[in-house]
Length: 252
Image (cartoon, rainbow, N blue to C red; front, top):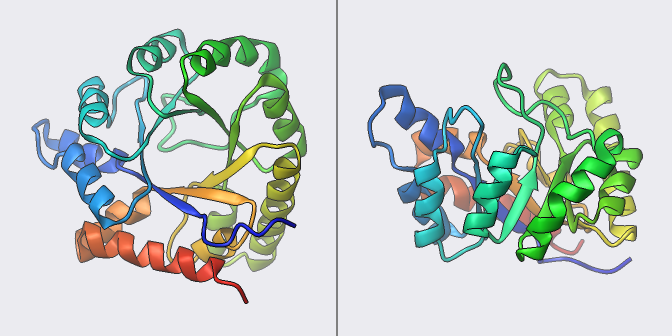
């Protein structure tokens, strides 16, 4: 197997800085300031999800991020015409297509690619033509990975939520089974030529086993880091995650 040691990137999701801001309806705390701090702290990219209901990140935030960032922006979005038009206007480095429901608290599960294969293939084609790297957020499921590959996605992001939830709830057999599924599907996706990312729910306690998978090139982490930043500050919170990720990739 190819040795990817040392190549793991950290994408920091700043959505929930905007959640706190929007709770009061003002301008503080500013997610753009958080993004710049994350850059300085060692983030390799910034992730922001512009939801249909604009519950956290807003259109103005996306415009601001495109202006100020010196690291890539990963623009998370649902597969709607509105979001496609916004992405084509801004042309971020990457777009990550995610499932979205108004009633959910956070993204639940991965995108159903196999069932919507033809529709999604046509949807992502203009994004690729515009120069955006297209990522699909999916469960660690072979059928979904194969479908993502067929529609022309360059990247998949594996949903780590079930693994993290099982760990938090003390269901360690289920946790280990989910981790093994993530490991197997990371290797499978890589064998198809897909770049593999992972994220959702990762913490200091759960990041290292996933970071150790040699095929995983990027982890996207948000809610936990913003929560830790309340206690530690943005820079130390990110630095500790970066340390744990790097430690997990060190040769044994």
